[in-house]
Amino acid sequence: MKAEVISIGTELLLGEITDLNAAYLASQLPLLGIDLHFISTVGDNRQRLIETLNHAWQRSDIIITTGGLGPTEDDITREAIADFFHEPMSIDQSLVSQFKELFKHFNMEMPESNIKQASVIPSCQVIPNPRGTAPGWWVAKDKHVIIAMPGPPGEMQQMWLSMVAPRIQREFCDAIIFSSTMKTFSLSEAKLGEITRSFLLARNPTVGIYAKPDGIHLRIAAKADSLDEAKNLVKATTDELRPLVGDYIWGADTDTLETIIADLFIRKNFSLSTMETDTGGILANTITNVPGSLQFFKCGIVVNRSELGEGFGIDKNVISRYGPLSPEAVSEMASSVKREFNTTVGLGLAGVVENGDAAHKLGTILIGIDDGKQTYAFQRTYPGTRLQIKQRAAIAALFELRKIML
Image (tube, rainbow, N blue to C red; front, side, top):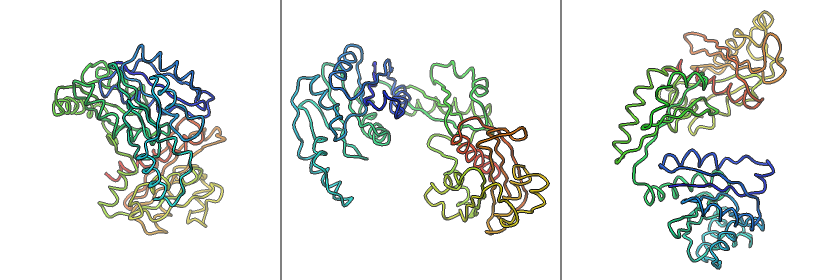
């Protein structure tokens, strides 16, 4: 099966937003054994979209569109597909009723413009949208299918996972695809590629390397006649990879570092407090994004680096002797916040997110951890923008905390 993705929206062509949907679908289609041959981007112009659909129809079996299903005048995907098939549109009153119930649930009055989203053509089957008002379309004709999904990535991904991918699997796939992801941190993409080189050449299971905000991921995917057989193939390869990658592995599949930390602290009945400079509270924010985090997270202090001192329980001699950007300072931060809030573990974080110098270049990260038995200090350097450095600082801190907790 050959697939094509059409991303719709003038804002994509203007560079106002990044096309996350095409990248997501490009990663998902191979898991179904479907080859993605083309990705197109077209603006909010009905005629150009019809032309793009016509090109796709000539060369692809499965055509997936994202975007253009909203309630405004420039949302023209439904109209373009209707014109392409020369079919009239009508309003599905059952969808209108669903919209009204949804707005009522949120104590809002439904705008008349939302009725447009209930438009259908005779040959389309409606795909429910679990996260929004824009339903998708599934239109199958002449051994082709056009699948129209909404543009917001959260809505599109949920529709894909719950509705679209399972149906594609049932109708078009003659084999079972199973995949698992091994997540690593503090290992470069190139180095991981060297370690796993022989596996990257394999055909089944296939192994791919992907750079992500929380590290480098290895995805192992296998194709087989049964799910159990595919799972066994993936497990065998994973078991061979694990000793090679070793301590750099921190999780798998849907794991996040913050959920792993939360699970560890809750199971051990431990508590945590943090103090961070330069990172603007991103560490505390990351930790508290996990449901149930307030069971163990007691305090997060965000302080200007220049204000570190006795007012925050920091020995002034440490700052005067070693400076606020030092292993000694972040260790003192960890011990201070642990002591002040009587927690099992204290964590200190500092970083250079702008204006690096000879002593501490841009991207320098310092992590201090006091677990009540020992104080640890780590120094790392990461490239990236201001936001990327802050994000990587929080991830690095949680990665080191996980190792110590284990």
